[in-house]
Image 1 (cartoon, rainbow, N blue to C red):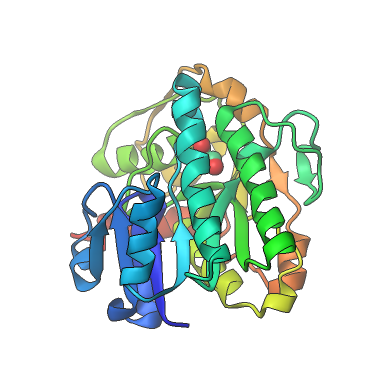
Image 2 (cartoon, rainbow, N blue to C red):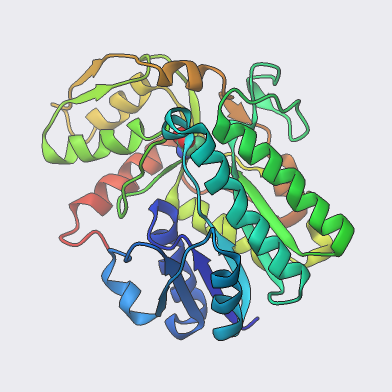
Length: 316
Ligand code: SER
């Protein structure tokens, strides 16, 4: 493979994926793009192109001008923010994906990654061990756009042979970058509050269980999926991927083993209804079978990993 392009490189996942791709393939083989500058210092090691992901011509120029083979298109408006701006979320979550798929169909790139989410599931899906092929009846515009996007990915693969691959990420927990506008973000906030000696005001109920994953597992899983031989990638909508699962109360207990004074105040808001519609735990045996997925971090491992990362002088 030649160069790897991240569209949406300045976001929560983009920064982490940038570091993963730079370490794996060399910074000179990574190209970054966003409308905002990337706040991580290592972004300076790779080419950065300011480009609008919603502009097809700008995306074509980006791919043609930089000899791109693989695109990771991470542009999205997350679940909670999307409910306040439904049409903006729909446009942002769909148009950049469709542009990337079209450019891949034209042969501009060889392989595409696009993230889906646990938000594709709604109340008609079993909550515990949610199957890969459960009914997708999402309750948020974010979930609707991810469901539609999964179907577009499969359509471009089946109809035009586009090698597009996808993962239904659970809540992603890292220490290098802040999320924005999601429903699972309370868990990232919890670590920042604990590290800063502050109390967390938690907008979910104490017993609201959600699937979660460390950023290091998410990035490794993404690279493993993208390196798998094409014939092994049997799921062309999006793979369920499970890391671990916990409630806010369980996370608090785990953090208190390291930060005994950590306090949480519960004040559930509209995000609680979104969380209630999502799975507790995913069945990810398709990913394990097809390309060997195996998470590293359970809840205890994730807590230790994130707190150690936050204690570093530069969270790099
Ligand atoms: N982390 C996302 C959110 O909370 C779910 O994919 O919106």
